[in-house]
Length: 334
Image (cartoon, rainbow, N blue to C red; front, side):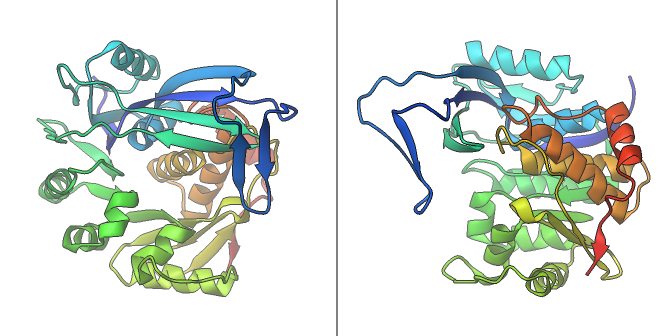
């Protein structure tokens, strides 16, 4: 068996996406309030329904696999008819599932998304798990640790201990629960991280807490966020910011901004995970910071042109072609 490049630790779930026609008279978007409205008790026609495996860790594992690297998933899932769909989907993507633990008599976690006018509204269920992970004899070049449900502290501690004991590079993308708590284990993991991934709002909350009003979107402001997160000990910090693109700071405090690929947006689910898997794969491929940001941007663009978090993830051949054909699309130093 080939050695594992990336072990992804986090959730695996089932994603169900309902795409609503933009001309559907029963669904309305209030742009001023960002509220999606439809009648209570109505029966609304769906243009298309899609079903696939999802979850942050699973999405990154698939993205890395498509880009030519060997990935393994550490997760707990249920044991029902939906769990088999998750297993089948990830197996087809050549993700190693030896460390996936099925829990008898428990249901799969499910996310239902409504795609409408280029964006998605998500209804997410987190089935309570113990997250009693066991890495066994596995090892890898990189451990990717991301969001987990309510009982996450011991799993995070076990993952950090595993990386330190085996001298494995740790890449960290905390979830909402972890950022809200902002406790000692989070600061410890950040201080040991080779790469820290967050979006702009998460960066603000990590540094300043939740009850704040920070309206600035200037590059200088984001650069301050990068410096602030880097001061917590992470070697490389990456901040994604939707249509503005991504920002990163390397080991020697050089800061960069990468724009987005302009393309038709079908849905934004999984864009961040796609960027992350592209960035990680570029590092494994020996790319520098600028190259990693380019890989992330192209992978993210592939995902937003399709429904769901995995369908648009690109393969290595397509990545190489995109890089060649767009050789002037590079990050700028800020």
